Amino acid sequence: MTKRFDSDIFFKNINYLLKEKGIKIGELESYADVSTGYVSRVRKEESAKPGIDFVVKVADKFDVSVDDLIGVDMEGLTNTEAYILDFLNKLIADTKAEKMLWEKESPSYFGTLNHDGFGNTDHPLISLYKVKHVNDRMIVSSDMLTFNSDTFGIQTKIHGDCYNLALKNGATLYLMDIESIPDSVDVLNSVAKELLIYLPNSGRQFLCSTKSQTFEDKINLLFATIADYFKHPQIKSDFRNVIDAFMSDDWRDDPAPEDPFPGYPEEPPF
Image (cartoon, rainbow, N blue to C red; front, side, top):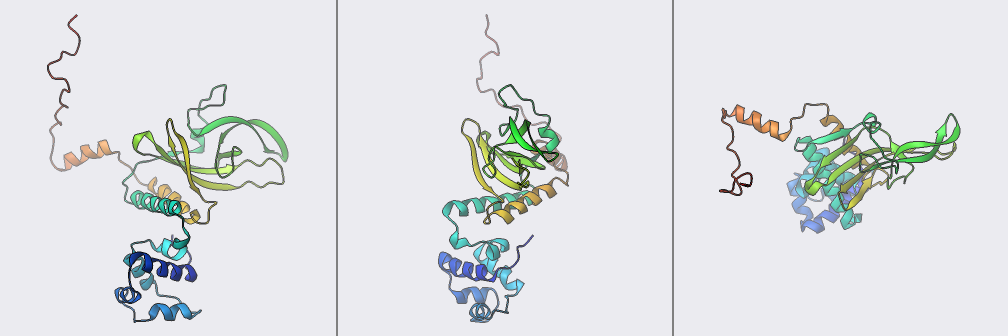
């Protein structure tokens, strides 16, 4: 899912990365197997475009993805945006390599959530609120499960499949497919995908959404990569360890963990 080539961004990124990496233009051209002055010539000729082999070689030299090289204004990124971009790239790469165990939350799953009289549900991001929405071309008010998004605010509902990933220290990464709830017949529904982290006792941290031009394509690529991940069988690590042991002819049970308090009886003697 490579982005459409943007010549201006591509050459701007080359100049930026040459300075950042301390690399000379001649060294880059030599690495990419093109003649001296190739970059300058192609950049000046409006109808000319660099060959795909050159683009791939440049991305390899700078250790960046082709998508980022031709579509992301790297010099214009803030430190936080660059940090999030690196995070998204690793999520995509590790998902393709099946290094992580994503969980799917379908719209039907959200419909089964229990809730109390205060609007709280079993899900840390979902609440029950009375909201206004369009029904048969009329504005009505009814109870609805909502997601308080940074993109649309409290007037947000689940649009499609959402995904989550367990991280360390009890944190969970959520990729939410969401839809705004219009409050008048003149407002069209709008959809987005939003990435955030939830940490117990700390709350939630919004990261980015497809409403940002900087991250739109990258989030869509992550979403598509995760959706493809679920088309194939997944094996949890505990079960994979059992299969790996069998494949190496290891039939013996692992030793029981050592007693952290040797010499102490399991129950008091009285």
